[in-house]
Image 1 (cartoon, rainbow, N blue to C red):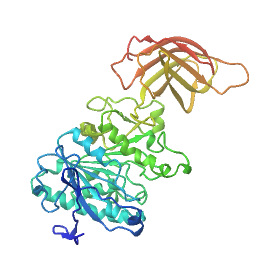
Image 2: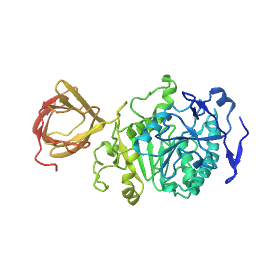
Image 3: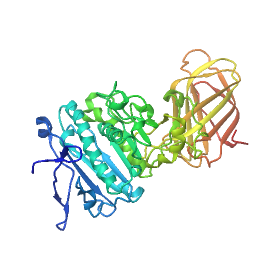
Image 4: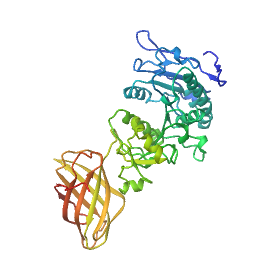
Amino acid sequence: MLPCRLLGLLGLLMLCKGQGESGAGESCDNFTDLNFSHCFMGTSLYVRLLLYTRSNLDCGRELNHHHPSSQPLFDLSRPSAFVIHGYRPTGAPPIWIDHIVHLLAEQEDMNIIVMDWNKGAANVNYFTAVTYTRDAALNLTGFIMTMQEEGASLSSVHLIGVSLGAHLAGYVGANLKGKIGRITGLDPAGPMFTSSLPDQRLDPSDAMFVDVLHTDMNSFGLNGAHGHIDFYANGGADQPGCPKTIFSGKSYFVCDHQRSVFLFLCSLNRTCSLTGYPCSSYSDFLDGRCLQCEAFKPASCPVLGYDVSQWKDTLLQLGQTKVFFSTTSMLPYRKLSYRVDMVTWNQYLRWGVVYIRLHSGRTYTEARIDHKLIRFEQYTSTRLLAQFDEDLQPIQKISLRINTGNVIGPRYKIRLLRIRFTPLDRPERPLMCRFDIIMEENMEVAFRPLPCASRL
C-alpha cells in the first residue's frame, strides 16, 4: 500500500485507494475487509469514501478527497447522503451496507457515499476507536468543504451515522457550524459519551435538522434526547425478540443496538410505517395518554425514516421532541394500535390486566395490556392503548378478559357501559363500539362490534 498523504486543506490524513474486481473486468472499490488479527494488533486510521449512484449500485467508486468532481458519476447538483458506520470489533464489513445503499437510491436520485473508516474503527480497544472519530470527522469535513467549493450545497448533505458513527457525524456538523442539511443518528454510542457535553457528542445544533433513533439506551446506546426529534423504539431499550441472557452469545450484546439499523432499513423499504407518538415517557405512551398529534403539520404523528423531514418546520418550532412507538420482534416490525375507551359501572373496585382479542374467521390476534394494573371502579372512564401484532380484517368478533388475579372468593362482576375501539394507524377505518356488557373477572366475554355513532 502506498504511503498516505496529508490532506492539504486541514493537514489531515489522505487515505489511499484499494480496488476489487466485479465481473467482466469491471473494477470496483470495495469496503475494507479485515479480520480479528487486525483488530487484535490494532489498526491506524485510514478513511476511504466510496460512491454509489443509481448507475453503479453494485460497484463502488472511490472518490478523490481533493477533487471529488473528477469522478464522472459524482454529480454535485444532486443531494448527497453519507453513510457512516461505527465501531467494528471484528473488522468485517457491516452486513447492512449493500441494503442501505440500494434503499437510499430508491428514495431519490442522489450521491450515496459510504465512509469506510474500518481501519481505525476495527480495534479490540474501543477507546482507541473513539479517539479516531475526531480525526475521521476532520477528514470528512475537509471533503465536504471541497464539495462546497466545487458547487455543492451544504443544505443538500445528509449524514447517516450508526452508533459511534452518529457522534462522528455530529463532529462533522459542528465543524461546519451546523449548516449541513440533516444528520440521522441510529442509536448513538453510549460508552464514553454518557456524561459528555453537547460539543462532545451528537446534538441538535450539529445540523439544520437532527433525527435520532434509540434502541439500546441501557447498554451500548446513549440515554437521553439528542436531536430535534428522538424516536424511542419500545422505550428505547430492550427490543422484542432479542436474547435476554448471555448464553445466547454475540447476539445478546449486539441485537438491541443493531435493531436501530434494521428498523431504519425497514422504514426505507416502505414495508413498515412506524409512527411515533409525542410523549414525555414510554409509560405514559403505554397508558394511552399521548395519542394525539393535532399540533403537527401535516396533521399526523411523525413517521420514522427518510421522510421524517416533512415534519421539520413543526419540530423546529416545538423544540426537542420525544416520540415513542412499539414494534414486533421481526419484519415488518409494525404493530396495529387501537385506542380503547371504556366506561365501567361495577359495584366493587377492581384492579387487573386486560386481554383483548380481535377475531377474523378462525384467526385472532391478542393484545395484553399488562405493563401495570388497570383500575376499574364505578362510573369511571378508562383509556387504554391496545397494540396487536397482526392486522386482521374484517373484525368479526372481539373478546375481552380482565384478569384480577383473584383465585379465591366470589367472582365479582364488571359492567361496561360502553367500550369503543379507535384505529390509530388506519384512521379511514370505522370505529367499533359495544354497549352494556356484563362480564365476570377472569372470564372471557365475546361480542360482535357495532358501528359507533361518532368519533368523539
